[in-house]
Structures are given as C-alpha cells and as structure tokens.
Image 1: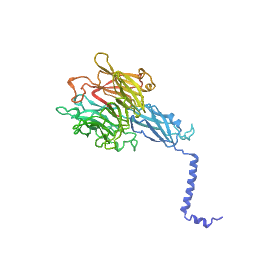
Image 2: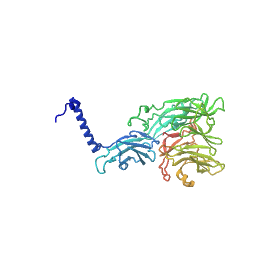
Image 3: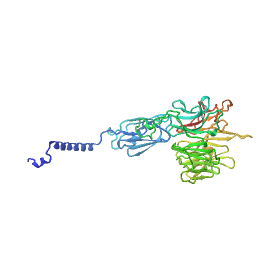
Length: 508
C-alpha cells in the first residue's frame, strides 16, 4: 500500500523527517537510561569548611552530596585527622557533623571519605560507590595580645602568635595602653591609652582607639570561593591607629566591647558637671551617644546578645537596655538585688556567674540560668574572675584564701569548678578543684583560650627601679601559660613565656 500524498504533506521537508527520527532515537535512549539507572559515581558536591580557618564558634561542618547517600556507609567511613569527636545528623543529601568540643587552635585537619555508597546501590557492588573525598581545613592560630612591660615595649600593645612564634608591636611609643578588647574577627583591637608627656598625664586623660592586627581569617561564614578569602577579608597592615573617642569634654573610664563587635560602651565623667556621669554607646562606628538610663556608674558587662548591659549598682545588679538617650527611655529589664557583680556569661548566653557579698564577710558564687539561682561556691576570701569553658561545663576562676594571722592578707589561686557536679548539688569539696597557687598579689589578669585548652595569666614583681610610667604594671611582670587537659583530675604545671608583659588576652 502506497503512502498517501496527504501523509507526505504533513512532513514535506526531509529535515522534518530527520528531526522526527532523532527525537524517536532520543526517547528510546532516555528510556534505556531510566531503566538502567544513573551510572555516574556519587560525589561530595560541597564541603563548607574546605580551605577555611575555623574558630571556637564554628561547631559544625556540612557535606552536600550529589545523590542521596546510604547513611551508615558514610558515617562509618568518615575520618578526621587529627581526631575530632562529634555527632552526625542528616537533612536530605546534606550531612552535618557537630563537634563535641571546639577544634584545637593552631592545627590543620584532614577530612576524608572512601567506600561510601549511594542509597540505591547494592552492597558489594562497584556501582554507586562515592568518589574518594579528601580535603583540608585549619583552626585559627593561637594568638594573644598583652601590654609590654620592659624596655621600649613598656606600655605598648603587643601581639604574639604562638602557632607561628611571631611577635608584633601594634602601638607607637607615644601611647601608653591601659586596657583593651579584641574584635571577633581578630582583625582589630579596641584599647584605651594616654599620651606619654612630661610631666606624665593623669590616668583619667585616656582616649579610646582601635588598631589593626594584620590578621586575616578565612572564616566559614564568608560566601563565595571556598578556597580563597573574599575581597572584603583583605587584611590591613598591622598597627594602623584610629581614634574613636576623645577626652575633651568627658573623662573616659572603663569600657567594654560586645561579643559581635558592633557596640562599645564607655563609662564617662563630664569635666564641667560631676553629676553628669554614665555610660555612652558607640555602635557600628557611629559617634558616641549617652545611654538613656544614666544609672550606669558601677562595673558593667555587655550581655552576649549585645542588646543589654549588666550593671552593678549600690543595691544590686541591674540589666539595662542598651540604647541611646535619643530613643524612648526604657525601664530596667531585670533587677537582681541579691548580687553585687556579674563575672561572666556562658558561651550560649543562657547562664551567668554572679557574686553575692554575704553579711558574714564571705563571698558566694551563684550560677544564674533562666531565672534559677544556684549557689555553687562560698569562700571566706575573694572571687575575682571566672571564665566558662566552651561547653559551659567547667568554670575557671581566680579566687583568694585568707592567710591566717593578725594582718589581712589574701593568697590568690586558680581553680576549676565542675558545673555538672555543682548542678547536681554535690558539696564544694567535690566541685572545686585548685589548679595553681599564685604569688600573694591581687592584680592578676587571667584569660581562657577560646578553644578551652589553656589559661594565660600575668605575675607582677615589685621592682622600684623599673616602674612603668603610667600603668600599674611593673617591668618584672611575667606571663604564664597553663595547659588544660579537660580532665580536672589531671593537673598540669604553668609554663613561663619568654617575655615580660601584663593583662594578656587571647584573640577569638
């Protein structure tokens, strides 16, 4: 039977017939492919820590796969060297590995995955086996800053990189640094200082500055290429000074920097009116503005969320909203009449350590969490400072004991408080673990490393021939490093660092 002329008229051109033929061939091939399945090997499409530098706040990395994976085969074959213990969770093709502890600083890690298979492959078959994955990331360098205490370093801000054994002097000789705080990105430090003059200036003449550290952090939070820093992360040269608050109309006293680095609170006193005293807010680099609630004359700390201020007042501890007086005035968010001061906040911001001054001249330490106030320590001496470990399970404290005798003397010591045991109501003998007995002096500054692996502290020595010009430091001040093993039963000995200084602080 001959095709009708009408059929040919439907596809009058040879090209149309060729196209129709190719479409039929493709349909057949697609059907075969669907029936036989995808023969390409699954792979890791994205690893968000690849080539990055992680800090203590980076607690989980993500692996995104090209196909749905067999979970047990991935979990059993995933390796991290050096070992980082953690937990695995899944959301579709994405796997999250959450660390039990922050990655130790100053370390390079390798993440590898072999012999994992996709969800649809048969066990024992070569089909569906993941392409071998092997990538690296680093933790941040172990870096701290301190105020120099000898020679031409006296009174100057110094940065020391323990990982690379590198020291930089950040501030010029004409400035004597009083105090400082580090920004979360480690790229800048805010500090108070006075100018060196003859005769020397009063400590009340300090101004507030920032200085660049020259540190560049390729952080996992940065977007874009996973192997190279973003353009916005380009480092500045170390030692670039910027004045952010003068002392023309007000004296600048103590200050604090918020955890996110967006807010600086400075306690100020008017030169014209002694009744005009209170805290001022510098937010996002804008000009300083007085805080609306002026009852901020005592010791204070910015809360971890950066929205409030914990202020010691004569009759207790107030939590005040952190807003300039140009905004609508607000009442205190909370008032805790029992406590005299707040020492520190937990890393997640849900708990705080506060001190109560008892009528029998003892001191009590309370753990305050979500409205619950629990006494965890009571001593006849002083409670000077406290630092939570990264998981909030251990509290590293600087305490003092009263020395028996007719004169009032205090013996300082470093100790750890087991918060798990304290929450269970165990006696102080089981929760308080002394670590190091220190020289008989109160002016000791202690800071806990962001990864919780070491304490750094200073030790001043009286030497009348070498007093620093304006700070209360002495040229013989030593710096000590106390390694921490995480096991409170395994004590270590402090190591003296090979330079003189005081007020050491770790960079985040």
